Length: 230
Image 1 (cartoon, rainbow, N blue to C red):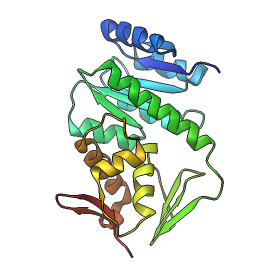
Image 2 (tube, rainbow, N blue to C red):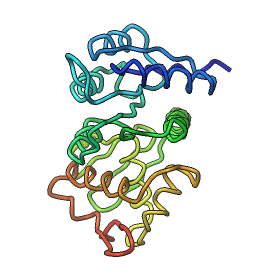
Image 3 (tube, rainbow, N blue to C red):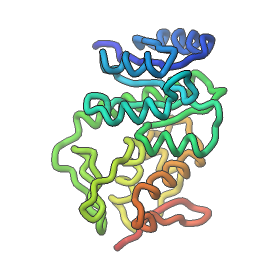
Image 4 (cartoon, rainbow, N blue to C red):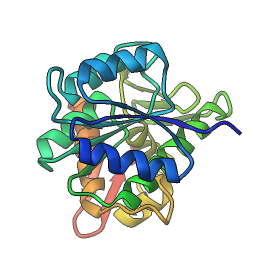
């Protein structure tokens, strides 16, 4: 089986060296780019299996690079994990809204990043092999997992892979309350090292994209989330 090829776009040489060593040791083929321009060129020349993308880059920053990549038909399905030194919610939400699949904040554990890469690659593989015609309807929401499409009252809404999985999980059981832990288990798997706050950030991004239908995703204080049963 061919090694998964990971493109790491990172301008800090020490972090790049650490990631190249860690990911190479895990059996991945690693390609690096020190700037946004170089990273975008590398993606266009040969589409990677996954991209680890720093937010703060010289020239084109990570968010702008992500925007350009997701507007390219050949690159839009490539999983992207954002890396942010800021750790600010605005950066995280911006990345998720643009289509990033996940994020980590610096300083981070290489083991945590590897776990998230494995999960993103597995989910990308599962998405490719998903059965056709698996459609979930909940009120005005229609989710087509084969096409990875969400339509709200006929309007197409772009979601990242993680956002889609969370909303699909809620939509399959409208009215049922899911704890944050249950959402993590269903979407990521029990071994996924993520915090409750990460789920909150993803839900915030989903609500923004739903626009005037944002209230269909309800918060159950002290418990978790549910999709309103309409």
